[in-house]
Length: 297
Image (tube, rainbow, N blue to C red):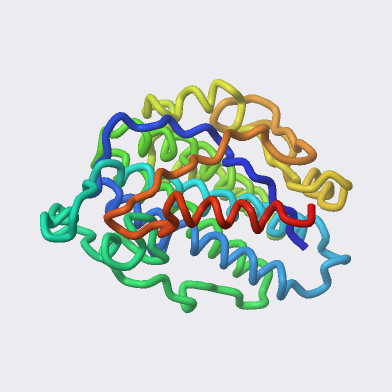
């Protein structure tokens, strides 16, 4: 089972202005082939389908715990996209065309379908596809795929970072560069444990340290590149310690398994958009809803 906590993994800076075209680019980091929806669903199905969980528990624990983190990554990227849509439209009578800016945006669909929020799709508007999931049943092959997937995801994050200087987008990307780098190393170490082959010698891919990015450097300084969370407070995934041990080859710092979850930051509360009829509840209706909610309490 999964336990939900009403926090983002980090605090996202509230934007002074929006950038809908930046949001369109960030969509790739959500619903692209190498986006967070892909990492989530790959690891989730591999953990569901894992054979001999008890015999190979350290590997199962690794995939299962990273699955839980990826849920939070999907949430974080989605909220970033939502914040990047600030100020795209304006409130007004339908005849003054309050959504007129939408026709000139790369992602017009988000104004039509989701009231200027995230889509389960990529930067080109293609829906996320279930065939992005690779769950072969062969442990080494799945670990190799996950290593490749995380390297591809890291590459795409770097490229989107270079597309936009928006603070909200870069804060999210900087954090995920560090956490994604942690997952790259985790799968590399898992492959070494399973096969004896030291894939860590290939890192980093691309050949650029996270500290080259201003918005990633502070998270490296906090040691987040050395920590794997169990995402559980009952000791059920502690055997990842048999894989996540030794020193980080990039920093030389010790690798740490931390029980539980990060402290995180608050969930943004999006303003209403009357021009999008979202959420579509007026003051009078809200009062009636409040009365019904409070009745018989």
